[in-house]
Length: 74
Image (cartoon, rainbow, N blue to C red; front, side, top):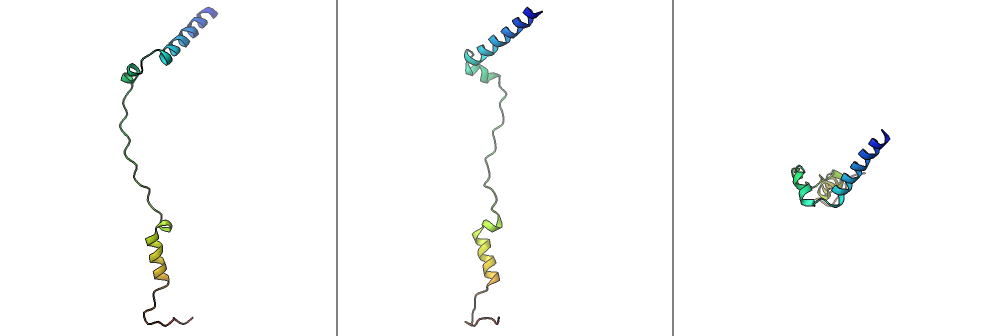
């Protein structure tokens, strides 16, 4: 029984070594299932606190520009 297990192990090692070093890469690639191409990555959405236009609009809403030159009462 021990010899049978040793023979099966030796056969497995030989097959794995043959596939790793001797088999042609083109023959191995032909048997592989082709995967669909990955879709191109979209740019990540920009968070509001990173968007300069959003920050500028917040600043303008918080501190509206003075049109008459007078400061509002404190």
